[in-house]
Length: 55
Image 1 (spheres, rainbow, N blue to C red):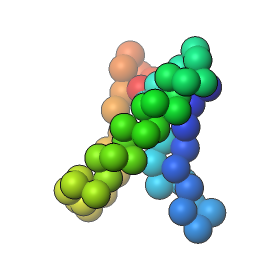
Image 2: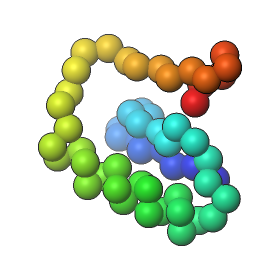
Image 3: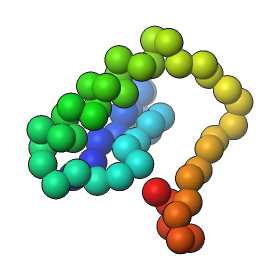
């Protein structure tokens, strides 16, 4: 289970991991949404990879 934030039918953010429990997924989405108002917006996309896979 993971979360994806969609605006105007475009995925703009997604969790970097999956969760075993719905409550963990919901909690972490909430934490992400709390950080959005104070986040710095930068140009480009950052993809994190671990062992050749997107994390």
